[in-house]
Image (cartoon, rainbow, N blue to C red; front, side, top):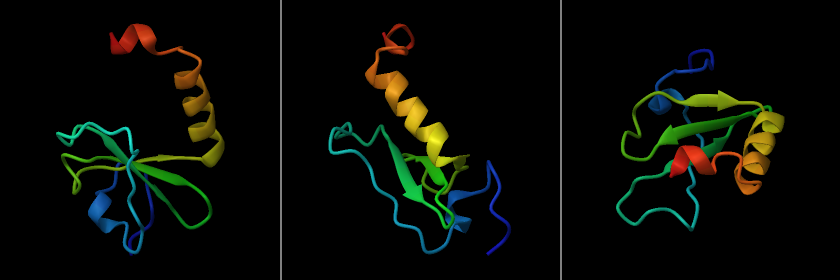
Length: 78
């Protein structure tokens, strides 16, 4: 496997298990997450599974999830 870098093709992340929320849109408009060796989190668009993956540290993902739960992105999503 090539070095893991932000924006690399998700298909190059071999041996990871992609999961999506049970609250996902039934039409497939959602994101999928995968835990990488070392604890980083990869994020990809479920409609483009071979597209680029955004890589986040576990703490960054936790902060993002907290912000979403706290409503900090409500304006963006409306």
